[in-house]
Amino acid sequence: MRMTKKQETRLGKLPPQYTFILNPYAEYRFTRCPGCERKMRQRKLPLFIHVDPMNPVALNYTCRYCPDCDLLIAHQDQIEELLAALFAELDPSVIGNDYLIMGTMERQAWRENMKQPMGIPEMREHLHDFKEVQTVRVQPGGWYPADMDPSELPIQEPAPLDTSWRRQAGSPDDRPGRFSKPARSPKLKKRKHNKRKRKRKELSR
Image (tube, rainbow, N blue to C red; front, top):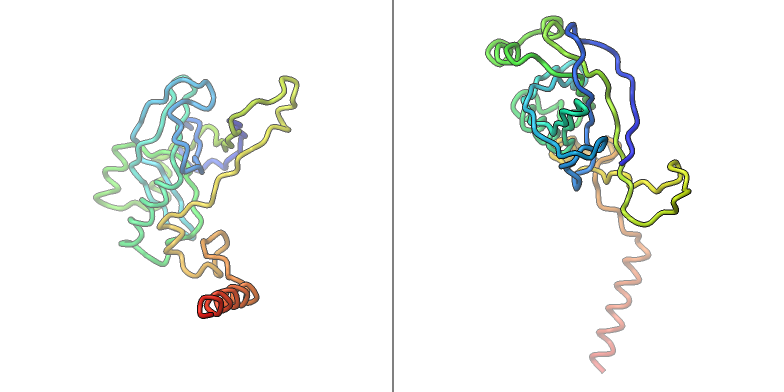
């Protein structure tokens, strides 16, 4: 595993908590910490997510958690499915917009927000930003020279996620990174058609 750090703007009024990773790999669930390699635990807590243009939500979600590294990991495909289900009821036009997971909310404030939605200024009063946000990339298993520079090791980039958040976002041409089947060239269609035609002729002889 390779991790890189990102600096995030502070929004919450409460002290920052946790190092955070949004896992972009659907096939890797990080049962072990990518930092210390110890077994991960679970921690359920309200994640504060800002969805463009101005749609703050608090999503109660069970993260992977390493107490030794104070590290939270959320799986991006799961987050997007939950967001799609939520905004399918609240505002379907928002589905597919950019979003940012900014921190965690106090649980009591999250419960109150479920009963009576708060505005952004009020939510900020109960928000812990993340101490640090990291990205993670997977190095494929295999044998590598002992003296190989770490920067030269191969990296497995995450495959595009196929989630409801992306599928329901509209036309693939309107939004970058959407999923569409590549168009087959007319020449290829013609060649395949001619091949089938020749086969039928041979069988009829």
